[in-house]
Image (cartoon, rainbow, N blue to C red):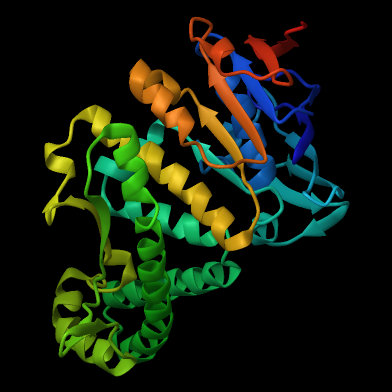
Amino acid sequence: MPFLSLTLFNFRNLRNNTIDLLSREVYFVGENGQGKSNLLEALYYSAYGTSFRTHSDSDIVRYGEKDFSVKAFFQNDKGNAHSILVVSKNGKKTIEKNGKKIHDRKELINTMPCVLFNHDDLVFAEGEPENRRFFLDQSLSMYDVLYIDIMRRYKKILKSRNQCLRDEKYEMLDVFDKQLITDGIEMQKRRKKTVFEFNQIFGQLYEEVSGIDGVSISYEPSWKEIRDDTASRIPTCEEVADSMMKKRESDKILKTTLTGPHRDKINFIRNNDSFIPSASTGQRRLISLILRVAQAVLFTRITGEKPVLLMDDVLLELDPDKRQKFTAILPEYNQLFCTFLPGEPYERYKHTDTKIFFIQEGTWNEQRL
């Protein structure tokens, strides 16, 4: 069971204290704005060293304070206990794992793998293409550390290439193109494989809950695949280089790189047509939820490990029938954290060992049986 306890100091409006999380299921119950989501954020922060709500640590520290910290104790499937300490002091963040400082957040990735179900996930269904690329990259990063390195290099090279275009220093483009293509093709290969694996899970789960069949995920790489006879393949470095050279004048005019994985498109289709334009808000919301379920299922299939699920008020948005069907297809998990409003029927979902905390003004009190 991963999370045993969580110790907070100046984390948003939460009180400075330790909360006992030794249970397979933990529910946080309270009105909006009382700190339920902040507790999920603190769990996520200890798992990944970053927030799912902001890119700035200054947004996390309690008002009027400068420093904050989060410390988590957890236990893996083999029964080994570990600790993670994340401290932000004077605007500088340090992370310690089992008392030793780590220098890259990717070292946390497989320590306490969490899958977050959040209201903002709706952007994966109806938002801009970059949101779906983010989800795909996040899914890959949960189990493929090498992909993190490839993606980072690609983004760094892309930034340098775009700067050359803006500065009109075109003599460096050939060098950057070669580096960009090598990592870009690796990203395309991994993304294509991951979308294929998602489609072995996603459509069936979506049909079980919604009753709508044939919904799948399509992947349209910016560097188009080459069709040979009856099959298609990812282009070679040379073929991509030729394609980029043909676009170079357009790149110069617009001062940005117009092709590459940063322009890939991921969409949802049914009967060979785009599904989202005709889908209702509820159907789009369900897509975002099923994506997270599929993310957790795929993670377990590849790693053999069960993730921690963090569910932030997402059941509230489903009608009773779909809520029942959705809870029935929840993936296997090592631990489950859910937030609920007081009026929700959370008592129906709990088990004999479920911990329930009532949250008010950043404080928590455990329900005693």
